[in-house]
Length: 420
Figure 1 (cartoon, rainbow, N blue to C red):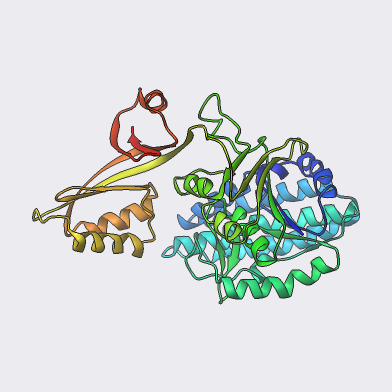
Figure 2 (spheres, rainbow, N blue to C red):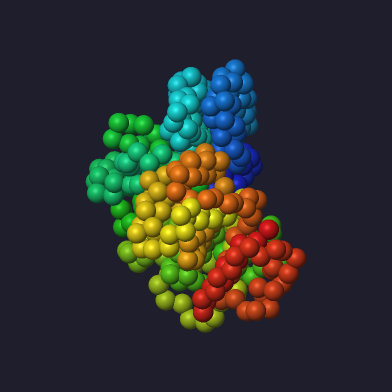
């Protein structure tokens, strides 16, 4: 058994979804198919969240109707008349859930409200995809992954209850696979013990695929993308990128930690722990070799470049000129932990602590309000965090020569620069 994961770009249009048929037909059965929302749907759902959160429910419901029409039009173009009628009825259930979620938006719990709305994207895309595959003769059963993946209540970045979820996967999904059917399910989402929907963080569909593989002892996971494999940098930002033929789990988890969007930070652990290889291949040409991620790789790597934008650099200086000691650091770390804020880079001096974090307005505001009583605060907004693994001085110079460096750190293998 293998797990295939398809992102939003691979099903962005009906033609794209049709183009995946040979990929699935050529895969070793049975397959678990983990699928994201249709291209740009998550962004559209985020716009609905924000409109409702600001109190403009009329605009939010208008956007829901627009999204519904888009999905119905997609399905009508793809399916025969009978299947279209059936999937339209199923989609109506999800859009009713979406309308209720808009009406129930809690302005004191943004992350909770976000998850109840955004989770609908994957449910809709997989409904359509499942009907399409069955229409084309590939026996496929649709599963709501919220019935399998149990999490805590850390909305937008939920922590999975592995033991419970594994038991559910064995009871719900394994019997379908034993019948020789494909399983169609959603990435990115799960549910709490109280059946509230959660998301696993952006790019969390990769993590879902890895969990399914580990819980059900898959031979391999393949992530199908619109690039020929894993590249050493984002080709949208950097010229002359290089494809990596093979790379270790360790190296990829380093890249993920520093913010690379190719593989979700949580994805590698269950695969490495179970020695399951991960392939990154191109759905536009399935004959391309792609990239394999595994335990042991020989040879050297090119510079691996990650650039995280929309960062904020915060400096907290003690008001009474107390040293930043272990006590202060423990106190500061606890604040970041309580607010669920990841520190992307940090440094401390005699009386100050500096942290580079994602510039999320709600979390930054809470952080500043919490620190303000004991620390004098300074911040630089609209900065980026550049990380280069396996760097050379020449590469770092070329990447930073036209920028203002605000903070720089180097180890033997990695350099990080906060710049504006």
